[in-house]
Length: 104
Image (cartoon, rainbow, N blue to C red; front, top):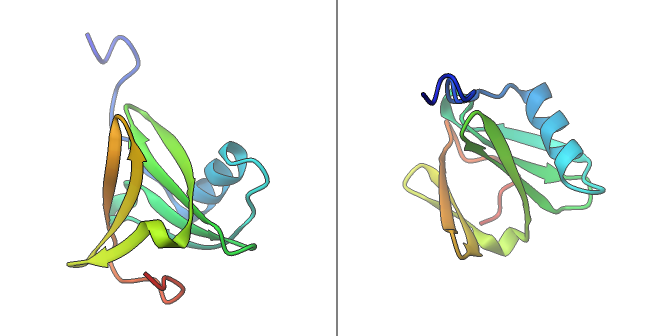
């Protein structure tokens, strides 16, 4: 049933797709750096203005959030983002390495 409704598989991102998604979904966001999650299952991006964009999988698409750098924490080889939303308190992205530009 899920397949018939369009929920076929988990989406995957490359750098170009991550930039396009973030810039298309976050008003005024222009990416300077991209760190892809393991397997392309999300991304964290640093904007040219220093802001942070976060892309998370949702069904067969993406949700995008702009976060302050203080909402990010690097713990145990993963990026933990504090979103403080009623249905999404925090999100964890497994990254192959800590991005050099991440100061959390």
